[in-house]
Length: 296
Image: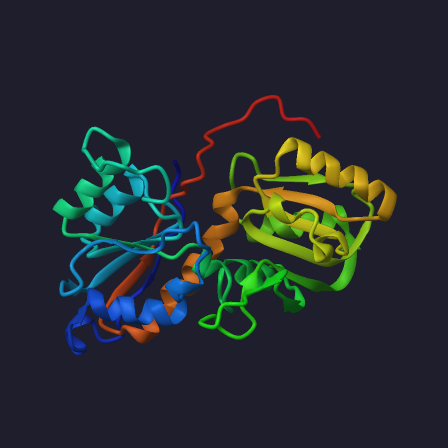
C-alpha cells in the first residue's frame, strides 16, 4: 500500500478563528451535498459510528475503511473518517473484535473518531464521482447515463455520465488520457478495441459498471470507461460491438476511478465548515501489490 501526496484544506485563520463545529454540523452539510435518501436501496450510507454532539476539528477522507486508513486517521488526530465505501455494507451480524470489521470499528470508537460514508448518494450529483471523472477527462455536454428519479436528488443528478471529447482521437490516445488523470495502480488501464479507432462519444461510470454494458447510451458511445469488468459480460459486449459498432472498453482500477472525487469533496466541505481541516488520505487502497507476465 503506497502513499500519494496529501491534500489538506485547512481553516484560513486556524480552528480558533471560527466557532467550534460538531459532528452534527458536518452531517447537516453532508446531507445537503449527498442526500442519504438518494442512495440505492441496497446501500448503507451515512453515520456508522460517532456522537453527533462531539466537537469536530479534523477529518480524513478516503475511498476505503481499511486498517491503514484507520491508522492514518488516528495518527492525524482526526475526529472523523469520511469514506466512499461503507464499512458495514452487507452481511454484518457482529462487530466482535475478532472480526476484521469489528476490530476496525472498535479502534475508531476508542480513538474518538467517527465514521461516515457517502457511496451511491455521492456517485450521482454534480461534483460526484462520475462527474468529477468526466471533467478530468475533458468531456463536454455531459448528462447522466441513468438520471435520478428521486425527489431529493439534485437537478441533473444520476448514475454515470456520457459526453463528448473536444476533438476525436484514437482509442490509444484516449486510453493514455485516462491513464494520465488517474493515480497509478498495478493494473493500470486495460483496453479492448482497435487502438487506431477514432473515439469522440464517451460513456463512463466510476466504480463497478458492467451492469450498464447493455444500456442504450453506453451502446451508442464510442468507448465505455468503468471498473471491474468481468470476462463474460465484457466478451459479450465486444461481440455485439463487432456487429453494431458498439463501444470499445476501457477498464480501470475501481479505487483509482473513485479517488478523484475526494479532493473536491474535501474542498467543498472546508468551504462550508471553515473551522474544520479536511485532509485527503495519502494512501492508495487499491488491493493489488504487483503483477507479472502482462501482455500487450
